[in-house]
Amino acid sequence: MVEVLSDSSFLLTDNPDAADYLIVNTCGFLQDAKQEGIDTLQSLAASKRPEQKLIAAGCLAQRMGTDMAAEVPGLDGVISIRHWPDIGHFLTAIETEPRTRPFLFQPTADCITPELIPMRRTELGARASAYIKIGDGCSAGCAFCTIPSIKGPMRSRPRDLILQEARTLVDDGCSELILVAQDTTAYGRDRGEQHGLTNLLQALLTSVPDTRWLRLMYTYPTHVDEGLIEMMATHRQICHYLDMPLQHGHPDVLARMRRPKDVDRILRWIENLRRAVPDVALRTTFIIGYPGETNAEFESLLELMQTVQFDRVGVFPYSREPGTPAHDLPDQVPEEVKEERYQHAMRLQQGISLARNQKLIDRHLEVLVEGTDNGISVARSYRDAPEIDGYVLVHGELPVGTMARVRVIGATVYDLTAVPVADNEGKIDGR
Image 1 (cartoon, rainbow, N blue to C red):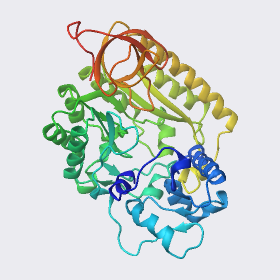
Image 2: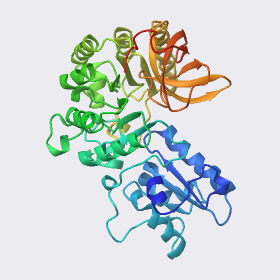
Image 3: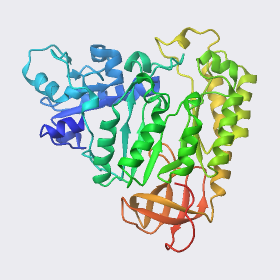
Image 4: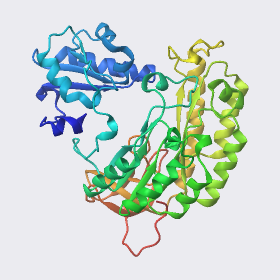
């Protein structure tokens, strides 16, 4: 939306008081995220000027439509995820067309498809990293997930447009390109490609060879293949980092989730990955308190965490979402049990994360500097995805947006501390 509006001579501001249009991009996936969107809209509605327009966009807007007005009486407009590329026409229509409140955008012609909009770093505070969405929607059909009902099945973006976007971003100063989709490993499968992601990675490495870091997010357990392992092991630009949401560690729970349930196969794959890429950082997510989860099944999840020793783990209590198959499953787990299990899993992972971070002390890392404050540089290594993982806090103020070599001198559960080192002081670990 920022890209489209910038091309239409709109100016972006991060100051709500200075804006003519207040656009809130919402999430409709989990109850907590939905509530965050509603709270933000309500807060802006309470303080906006009469001439300002408040607009709800994103997945919650897609899910609720004009029903959002019951939650946010001051709402002026709603635009769904299927129509966001036409945000410029939407802002014109909200000013000129007779309408009821809130205005629900219903274009008379097909709007621009997202595939036709190459993105650039026009957003406020442009950083040296950028996300590239390689597809949208999901065909996995997990029992707990609302994404297919909101976004529809997986649709891969054309490869040439992804390459064009990557080239533009790197030319604009990006050091890190982060490939995202609801399932990045499903890339190309909707077009009949069996190795779409690895082919895309090879094309990126060929056409944008000056990319410093390529990072993969949201890989599906049974879609990751040996070709991806080989690419990570042989191409230095691909970060030795893999985000593979497993969701649980017991096959019966995974079966109820409609997820891949062959835990032994996943363990063998992780073993092969670590053999080929010894310094790989593994991130996963788990849902605890899924309907019917027994104490024994939860203990099985803890055993998996202990066995694999993941570097990063996100733990989420199950959220009962209307319209999903899991919503009506029997044996819903009480909230107090979910909370107890959540705390137990987090305590276990915090100990594992601390131990794995401590092993990095005295190691050299390459880091991407994101900011400075009071003589400290806030940076990330290949082990840290932006906004969800930790930081490397480096003594001294280094140029923002640059890559630097550092030596780790301390570790906490989530973050590392480090000092800069000269170029001839040893090998850098990981990419």
